[in-house]
Image (cartoon, rainbow, N blue to C red):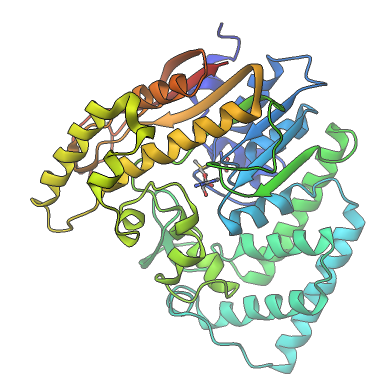
Amino acid sequence: MTIVPHSLESRSGSFIDNMRLPVHRWFRFSAGFSAQWVESLLSEHAPLNDKVVLDPFAGSGTTLLASDVVSVRSIGVEAHPFLVKIARAKLWWWISVEEFLDAAFKVLNTAKQLLKTGQERESYPDLIMRTISLQNLSKLDALKKAWETHHDLSPSSHLVWLAITSIIRQSSFSGTAQWQYVLPKKRKKTVLDPLEAYMRQIEMMSQDMRQMQFLVNGTSKAILYHSDARSFPEVRTNSVHIVVTSPPYANNFDYADALRLEMSFWGEVRSWGELHEAVRKYLIVSSSQHASREKLILDQLLSSELLNPIKGEISEVCKRLAEERLRHGGRKHYHTMIAAYFIDMARVWRELRRVCSTPCDLYFVIGDSAPYGVYVPVHRWLKKLALSSGFDIAEYRKLRDRNVKWKNRKHRVPLQEGILHIKG
Ligand SMILES: C[S@@+](CC[C@H](N)C(=O)[O-])C[C@H]1O[C@@H](n2cnc3c(N)ncnc32)[C@H](O)[C@@H]1O
């Protein structure tokens, strides 16, 4: 059954299209996926009135907002504290636009006053000092202080917080890597003035709120928990009917680092080192930094009964990675990263089996990986782990090839992205 239009499905793994969609575009999170694909997938499951949708890796909230658009109840789980704040703010799209504008202009006027009186700027972490000009930093600092003065825990305050958060990168002169990393040495051409960027953002947000309120009746039907996809007791047993998600890939992308600029600005971390305690240690192990900081031991990981369905294959791959590591200067901990990743994902399947009703449909957008050029058949192993957790059917559909066009690719192993559809 392929009712989802092919063009939408083939773009399901991409966030780019969301930058044209109301509310989704309030914060650019490149690790997100296509909202229109989610909407179209959910519409296939109509009638939706009694159904509950879950995204156990909610990120910036794409599935939850798409669920709001098609008027279905949804639940999100996200472990990154800063992403939880971003997604929660977006879910306030339904509040009074006037209230939001009022709060936004109060902050702007106070910021202008602070700039006039030349109030002293607070001290910022090194990353901020190296990536934002002093002139722009003074303006961002004034907006931050003004926000702190008026913040009253109201939904409008959260939206204003998001408006300021969204303009930090636009006001910085440093470039950003393919996904989200900030590259202090790479200069970009367009740097916006923070006060102008703030005005633009406020205008865009208020327009989007009006548009969403016109499209969707009532309030958001989404609940987002700051919790862990491996165990989220907040969600009742047998209460979920559809899961649409994209887990971290086992490809060394560091979600903790992805929002370091924004977290550093708000004083939530002062250095790269602090990211582990503040964020990374709560996430699925999907980067070598994570595996090395946790000092994981391969034999211990491989003895986990959670890996039983793939034991032989994964042991061989991890041992090859352990050997390969000795041939590379960086000595990356991919061997323990891969073992720990699949233990974590086995826990996720177990928890999903608990919360999902029978029947249920689960859609995972996933990509495979090849650290040090050693191929890891992610979709095949995730399929086996899902079936051994008690789900009945697992089908994988390839959507697109990856690693075919990067000029500086580190290996030539063909990779792909696809959708794993599980039924239970
Ligand atoms: C591929 S992204 C999902 C992006 C999301 N679809 C969106 O549109 O923004 C994977 C997400 O999983 C989150 N994550 C990692 N470990 C987690 C865990 N143990 N529990 C819940 N979320 C986790 C990451 O912080 C990241 O936001």
